[in-house]
Image (cartoon, rainbow, N blue to C red; front, top):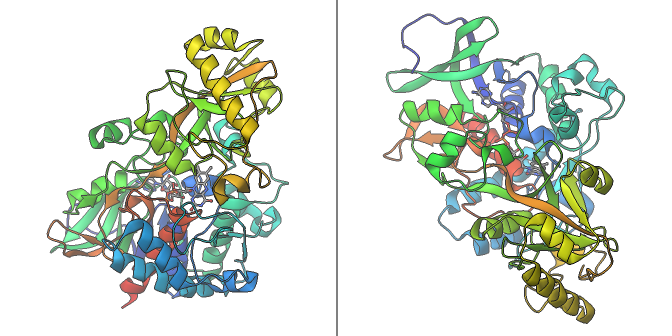
Length: 505
Ligand code: FAD
């Protein structure tokens, strides 16, 4: 822990660690209230996984849903969350529901920020579900509006992974639009100091209160005072193989969708050293990932054809399940996993981030092509007899138009990506293909235990004065459930906003 009593190198009212959607929303709330605010970002660019994201935001009962006329309300969202999560985190749920409309009012009053409803079904068949969803997204942001600041936002995932940087001419969309818009708004307050290449390493605790941080900066270690509070919103520990192993998170650090090496649990570690308690540490926002030529996964959702088999060559789940649920099926089954498809369906999922192209995948040897199923089995190591039987059974179900084994195509979520059809397409037209699928994630979701105001709790459930957490640095109030599109970002923003309101009291 940073030593108390030493002098400060810089003084702020609020210090925010991280620059994802939660961090930036919290920083905007602080800076626009006249508080001198520092955003510390470990890497050279802002936005973390939030910048890679689709930027769906699940904040129910706000004026965005009202404008869209979709009949959403806090009551129906409560019913839905309650049915899925129970009442174990009821206080957090209520705080989240209460804050959603206020937060959206606050954000949209800023000229830099505009949202629109985007249809995308909630993920569970439960009372209060909205079949077309209730989440919204930021409008695209022309790069010119950001000017020189555009270079501060993390590039799209495909360009970032290939080290290709920005495409200056293109508007920022989805997660990059969200981060770009929040950055514009923070900058306009004149109270925000955005410091890239600056990693929180320690917390300074004086008389039991967190009064600042120690950060590794391009100029060496610096002590930064935080008069009102420190908000830890620096992602989870998905990129730390050691912490994942220790805490039993399935998947792998090499397969997470988070930016390479960014989220290694630093803020959680620093807070634990200051007496914080943790929860839900073996959990993540899971997803299937299809392997791409660089050996990294592409987050895939919306399977429109093909079938997924486990290492024994058998199906084991409804392939169209919402991605976190499919990820959990992968975690419970034995791999290696393959998406098997043919020339007819082309098998490609509706969405892959980064995008994948069949020809490129096959040419690189990442996906296997074969003239027959027997050949495909030989090339992938799958048992030929079982694979043939699985495909024959699947084709029979496809002919009937009913997946009697796993009920694919029966839920509004499944049908969303397949134009209302069950998405059961026979696999019988050579060439055949096998695409390896791994258990990926969008970040871990266990971390610091907080109260409904984002205050970090110690082992005796007492808030640690001056210390707050949001996003994947904190233990999610949703437990092991991923209720709908935009919950990670919506909840990160809501609890970061609440944390800053608490700091101001
Ligand atoms: P991040 O956004 O990852 O931000 C953490 C930041 O903290 C990083 O920039 C990191 O470099 C920085 N950091 C780490 N350590 C330190 C340190 N010591 N000091 C300072 N900075 C540090 N979720 C949704 O809600 N809606 C969606 O539409 C959606 N789509 C997705 C699509 C894709 C392709 C992916 C990959 C994810 C998606 N998700 C979505 C999930 C969501 O993006 C993440 O779970 C969420 O953004 C995590 O937010 P965070 O603030 O906790 O972490």
